Each structure stands twice: as structure tokens, then as C-alpha cells.
Image 1 (cartoon, rainbow, N blue to C red):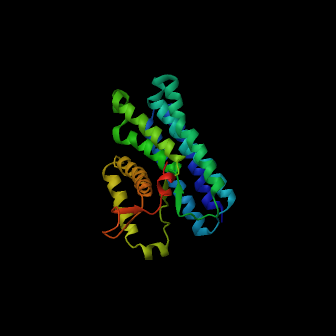
Image 2: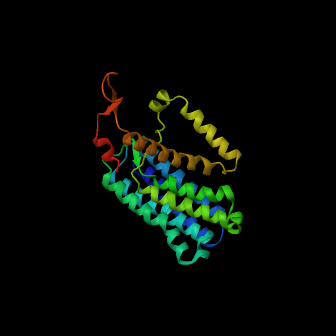
Image 3: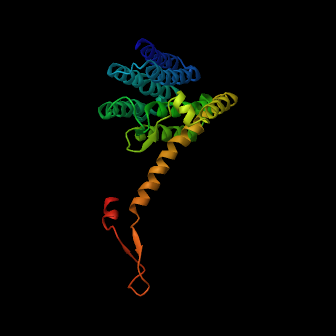
Length: 258
């Protein structure tokens, strides 16, 4: 039973290898497309593992090894070959960020993993970070990126932010698994997925970057709002004849925010 999900994991790492080959040969759009294929296989191996009830520690380890190639090394080689090689040692270091921080993120995930079911991710998942970096190229096209220096700086910021957020403690929700139970509870899930896929097809994949960037920024915004709310002192209303309008009930709340 474990053969089917493991086959998709092997395809995942194989597509990552093809991405590296085509990036080195200057076929950047095709290389980026192979990262998308890897992400599809990464999703399918989890679905197949649940359907066949064959989730195992071997599958988890194999999946992490595949992810570090497809979503760590492959995007790093792609952005280096695309434009960062022209920026010398700084470009080499920045290109390696996705690989280095991705390795740290996967190691932390494996250590903290308890069981095979999770309701959230701590930090941006490495496939999401890789797809965001690659979809930036889809949105602006390689030729435009190579000519526009300001666009290259924006790309550098995107790479840095996606890489660092992988090892952050910001929580991101897990996509709901596609099953009969999920469809009964969330009947709009399939129409929304089909609508999103159709939108991506109509825009020839260019809408992928704004969608993924919005997902990443939503996590940052949610974490920022939660931090601000935790920093606000709790107050209670006192009678009008008492001194002052309100008194803090939790003086430790501010200290925890430092």
C-alpha cells in the first residue's frame, strides 16, 4: 500500500532534479514549471497515504528529503541562474537562503512532528515559500526581471522574506484534506478549488504569485494583530466616584510583549 504515495514522493524529487537541469541550461520558465509539478506530487503523496492508510515514519523522512531537493535546492539554483549570479558573492548567499532555511525548517518540523495529522504549520511551509519565489518569475517573466534592476531588488526581498518566515513561529493553517467527510462539512470547498484552478488557467499562472503572497502576508498580519492585542493592558470600569477611569487588571501583559 505504501508504494503509491512513495511513488509520488519519488516523482517529487525527480521533478526537482529536472528543475535544476533546465535552470542551468537557461530554460527558466520550464524549470519553474517543474517546481509546480513537484508541489502537485507533494500534495498527492499525502492524499494517497491517507486513502491507502499507509502513513509511516519512512514516508515522512522520504518526503522531507524530497522537499529539500525540490523546494530548497531547485528554487535556489533557479534564482541564482536567473539573475543572482550577476550580483557576486552576495547573490550566491541570497540564492542559498531558500535551501539553508528550508533545511532548518524541515529539521524542526520532523523533530516537532507528533503523529501524522496536524492542524497548523509553524512557519511558512517550504513548498509554499518555493512556489511563491517561483511564481514571482511567472508573474513578471524572466526577460523583464533580467532588465529591470528595481524588480530584481523586489525579487531579492521576496526571497529573503519567504526564507526567513520558514523558521518563524507564525502559524499557518493546513489545507483541508479532500475526503467525503470534508466535503460534507465544507460543501463549497470543491467549487472554490475549481474556481481557483480555472482562474489560474485563464491567467496562464500569473495569478499564482498574488494568491500565494496574500496567503503569506495574511499569516504575518494575523500574528501582528495578535501580538498587538496581547500588548494592550486589560482594563475594568470603576464607579464614577472612584479615582481614575480604569485600572489595569493584568500588569504582566505588557512585560510579556517586550
